[in-house]
Amino acid sequence: MVVKNDPTLMFTNAGMNQFKDIFLGNIPRPYPRAADTQKCLRVSGKHNDLEEVGHDTYHHTMFEMLGNWSFGDYFKKEAIGWAWELLTGVYGLDKSRMYATVFEGSPEDGVPFDQEAYDIWLQYLPADHIIRGNKHDNFWEMGDVGPCGPCSEIHYDLRDESEIAAVPGREMVNQGSPLVIEIWNLVFMQFNRKANGSLEPLAANCIDTGMGFERLCMILQGKKSNYDTDVFQPTIQRIAAMSGKTYGADEKCDVAMRVVADHLRAISFSIADGQLPSNVKAGYVIRRILRRAVRYGYTYLGFNEPFICRLVAGLVDQMGGQFPELKAQQTLIEKVIEEEESSFLRTLATGINLLDGVMAEVRKSGGERISGKDAFLLYDTYGFPIDLTELIAREQGIEVDLEAFEKELQAQKERSRNAAAVDTDDWKELIHIKQSEFIGYDTLSAEVKIA
Ligand code: ATP
Ligand code: MG
Ligand code: MG
Ligand code: MG
Image (tube, rainbow, N blue to C red; front, side, top):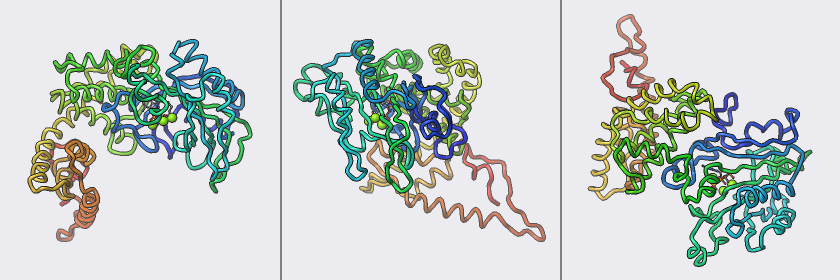
């Protein structure tokens, strides 16, 4: 899941990442076909679902993407036919609840309507279950350049009969409904996007498919939320027992339990894959995810002692068989998480109190915005992360003046630079390291006080 040595990508965010070089023809294909499950993390860059996670029931930070692959071997007819066979024949999904989307075409790219995929789908689905989709939903690109092509997605309607009667499923596809959701994306890689923006046909047509394992589980287990499946319930029940709260009794607590259950996986698997929390790049992404979980647990579930580390053993029991790397590093994972939690919990307690005061002032004066100065004070003096200030404020309908915050930050950096060289007699004292009384988690400037 952790990508090393690729400046464009910190974490695997789609099943195809590790096959990139085969599609590009940079390395010879080792086999014509493959089928796999790939751990993905969508928390940064082009795919970032972090803010949704916990609030909705079907986006995770870490999830397993199931895929089948053709490297210049089979193409649309087989990919669609086999997807249909697996979903309806093997898994027994209800055909009347299934919808397929096909690419409507894009004149500016010279790509026509995907008649071929449409005609194949007509063998399985009635015409009113086949929907034309635009470039945003139905044309898949790896990046600005590289292999790409139209895609065809399978969506499933989980609503009750009465709701379906009121609004037909076809009107709900790709509308952000938690109950009419995309489960599988079949990508038909036909083109190579060149640097000048034009498309050229690939030497060999390829297939890249991705199906969300947790969403599939939800459907197969007859649930309406990924979190109600046996992928997440064991952890959620543990969180419920530890907090003395019941899942399903209160929406805010439920969101918090979902956040914690989700983030536990992302953090544990990242550490197992070699990415420790830190202050930079991929490490900071992991730290942010962990803090988001701590914050929800602290605010809504009453945890003021490290608690996520206590959930690791259960996760290892559950997933360690399939993912031995998790089992092998259980102790390290627990230790790292515990340390992160305890230091962040200290920061949190102070910061949240101060932020509450700031927001009360904003409201009293009839405003809707926390000033850059206040946000910076929280950040600089109390070590309270700016993204957390933003998150908490947003939940209360308050904005943060980020532009002004940036200016404060720049000004502070200037001050530090200027202060870094101070003349004392004939000695030049560069920086003076003091014992810090700061209780924050990691702010660099707090450990190294500029003289
Ligand atoms: P959505 O529109 O629901 O955000 P997507 O179009 O971004 O999904 P794709 O990039 O096509 O998703 O990925 C292929 C499949 O992976 C999706 O059909 C879905 O089943 C699953 N998937 C995508 N994002 C997530 C996520 N954040 N959590 C769980 N499963 C996901
Ligand atoms: Mg998405
Ligand atoms: Mg989609
Ligand atoms: Mg998709």
